[in-house]
Amino acid sequence: MLEDEQVALFLAARLIARGNKGTLLLTIMILAMVFVNLIFLPSIIAGVVVLFNQQTIDYSFGNLIVEPKEGELRIAAPVQLVQKINGIPGVVASTPRYTTGGTVVYRGESTSPLVTAIDPAREQEVLRIHTKVRSGDYLSPADTGEILIGETLAGTSRSGGDSTPTLGGVAVGRIVDLTLPNGVTRQFRVKGILKAGTSSVDNAVFITRRDAASMLGEADPANAILVRTKTTGNDDAMRLVLMQYGVQEKIWTWEDKSADFLESIVGSFGIINAISTGVSLVIAVVVIFIVIFIGIVYRRKQIGILRAIGIGRSIIIKSYLFQALFICTCGTLAGGALLLAVLQFLAGNPIVFPGGPVAPFLEPRLVVQSVASLYAASLIAGYLPSWLTTREEILDAIRG
Amino acid sequence: MIRGEHLTKVYGVGSVEVRALDGVDIEIAKGEFVGVMGASGSGKSTLLHMLGLLDRPTDGALAIDGVDVTRLSEGERELFRLQRLGYVFQDYALVPELTAQENVYLPSKVRGMTAKECTVACRGILDQVGLKDRAGFLPGELSGGEQQRVAIARALVNRPALLLADEPCANLDSRNSVLILDLIRKLNRELRQTVVMVSHEDWHRRYFDRVLFLRDGRIVEDEYGGDAPGTA
Ligand SMILES: Nc1ncnc2c1ncn2[C@@H]1O[C@H](COP(=O)(O)OP(=O)(O)O)[C@@H](O)[C@H]1O
Ligand SMILES: [Mg+2]
Image 1 (cartoon, each protein chain N blue to C red):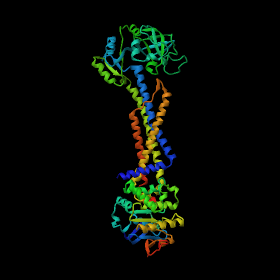
Image 2: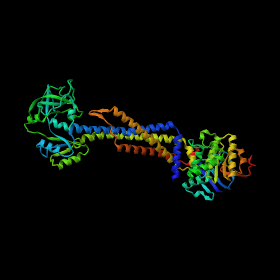
Image 3: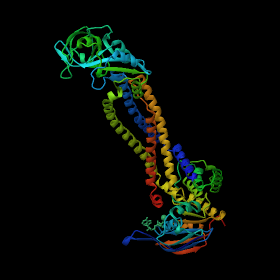
Image 4: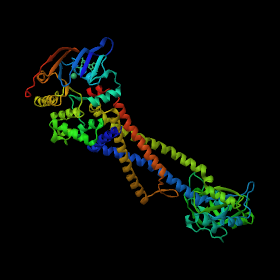
């Protein structure tokens, strides 16, 4: 019977229009905040993930990482391979690297960071480390005997306590001793201090591949080629493209390389987020439930008499469902406006994480999901009290 | 119109049982204005609840408008109440957010009239209870007597076969009580509306065509011939 719905809607509309505005407004406000809460935190987390991914690509791996064939320690003829990869459609640039352990000593302070030997010119087309020189300069292709040191590793002159070992405040222009695993030691002048907000830069040192070649006694040492592609997100497909173009070395995507770490971070954020979502929804249910429950209890006799004259129980319940839907719709809209205001504010005053400002990342799926869960919560909170209180006998309700 | 046989209602179980109605036989004809009187606790409301299908008798048979109502399911009883019965209670219990006309509109709309038919019916019945110019007022803006008149209009908008009123004047002063009694009497006469009304005020007697006097759940007196003032 459509009449039932019409009457329920009519009743709901009048109760809202002529009912207590203060309570209504407060309820809508609470729902609005719940809505913001449902979306805001996950968006920040998603923003952190986006930032973190971008950092991983920009400062650690590029999009793809080519490594030596099975059972080999070096990439053969790396420069030719780089040129070949650069010719593949969808590739922006690639750069060869040789990464090894090493020991850096400065004024008696000894550390064992990762040592990465790079081709400075190519490197700049793939990664963005060159934009993160805090003091001094980046390496030039012709440099020999020059080293870049990450800020954390460089340390400060104040004794760093018992945290990770540092070089005690080495500065640009100072001389450090670098020993490679083959036992060869050379002196290097510190050309620049790097600060990228990621440990693969801030805890590492960089020299030219030219220096590494002479220390190792090899012509062209490389154990990785980092590849930058035109777009991020199609990395698996690009990996296949590289294979189709005859790259026989092992190829990883940046996600392969960072998956464990990222997943554990996102995972623990996810738990926090699930708790926050759950609590918000419970708040939404409880608030609507209480508001409607109080309204119904207060009208107990009135509803009893309406039922006596033939306004069926289902009409009463539906009218409260409509009211809950209305409150929810207003709450969602108000919440949406509030959220936009917050996002607007954050655009002007971003939250800065190590590695840069975080832009909240609004996933459409999340918005849809939040709206849906809020509506579900509202329907439950509208149905339950009206169902419960209209369950009693009409006469009991009338007698009060 | 109404035929009840051996209507019995027992509350409670075992040793503490209360026989609120104790084998009442009752027959009411169409168009009668019947008063149900008696002391407090004598079973007046219980009888009215039986006739109004708000409660089921423990024992006995009841037919209203030719329908054996004891056989109806809960859903059928709800429909029967909506279509054939009208109620007025001591408590007006209007919906405070609805105007007088909207309060009356509710049961007529549920009954399935079109919006237009509802409006015509509501206007007509509000006119009949003398509230034509109060149709747009909220209950809070009306006096107790006016609210009770809205409740009467709400009970009558669907042209019920039977109007049941349980002490409709209990919350009103005597001036307003007279207004309500005159109104019900008038409706009874003009619309040939069958009315069963509970009252424990002795001076109401003269409005009724017939008075059923209850004591301890039994009809102890069945008296015809009230004569309402001002209608002669
Ligand atoms: N729900 C109930 N449970 C138990 N006893 C009841 C109930 N309703 C009414 N009674 C008893 O039934 C008797 C008749 O009540 P009622 O019909 O309300 O009397 P009246 O309307 O004449 O004052 C009273 O003794 C009352 O206490
Ligand atoms: Mg009573």
